[in-house]
Image 1 (cartoon, rainbow, N blue to C red):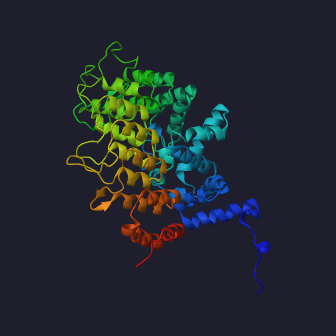
Image 2 (image 1 turned 180 degrees about the vertical axis):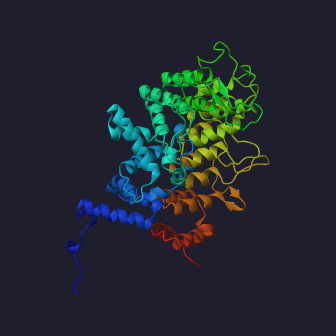
Image 3 (image 1 turned 90 degrees about the vertical axis):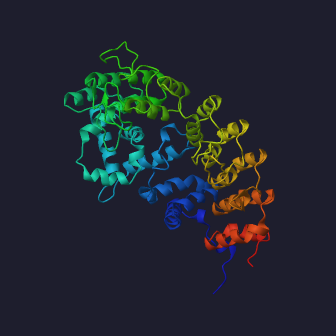
Length: 471
């Protein structure tokens, strides 16, 4: 057999684009989602083409997004919500499964009904409605819930009308007996959606339509069933939007029985008990905003202050810089909350929020914090930053005194950081950490064995190039 010369070789990108795409689809199916995303690092063309290829593979259909998108509406998520929104739009517009997946089918059906009544473009309507449906639409568990319930297309249409500000459709559905407090399996309640979208006239129409109050029992903290002209859903929607005027409208509806009163559902302004069901609703709305003005306004209703350090950890995790600044100014502890595993600096490192890391370090956060007598902590900022793939943050931490020799349960943090970088196949970070002084004489063989066992060939090559061998 004759040997193959360089001129006989066919390069991948010499093939037709359709064939390259099919090859990439099979590569994604073979490697799985995590390693498929790493193909973006191979070259510029892979970076451009990997997203549509992942979409075509439909592997994302089976991924649960509860941990990825729980607070997407107030999180600086570096494009994650836009990515999942794009996928949801793609799947709704390309739903040809047999049997069809109800979550995709139902979003498409309500969009078609909206367009039949308004003449709007179906594609644009699907794109818009996929935002309020993002959490349920990207959750495969929604299919089983939907299949157990009878379809309720009119409720879905009322939800869409509330979000899109389609007042004639909403009024008709209200007259037909549909409640704006009802929550569909794909969307939040129409009351919440109207407030979230900033549709003040729509919210007032809903407030006018419903009773003053029903289901209220102020005693239990976790009574979520109370509702009326004032209710948890609309307050939460307005807080998520971060619009102080919408929050005021949700808290003090003009159509309530005592429109001039500053009381909140029977409790005096400034004296609301956080432990009551009504106080809990305000607390949850406060928890769901990243707007400092809205946060401070809701805080003014309570008789006692919020746990600033707990809230700081959350907004550090979400990357909300101005909220982090406000909470630090108000006295929140940079170490976190007593008894909790939620150090703000570690949370910011975990989600790669560089600006929040900068602020916390500037305000005295400890780059070597791994817990103390009062605060439980698993991990260390530099190890977490490495595991999250941010070389920039690793550099920042080292620049502020992070110590690779700092120990956690007898193991230096340099080991944790290097081990994480190797398993991410992050070439630049591995080389940087080795140059920064991670002791390969102590830890190199252990990490090399792990890389070999997982087939991380490029990492094995780097480690061996640094002189690491197996004994």
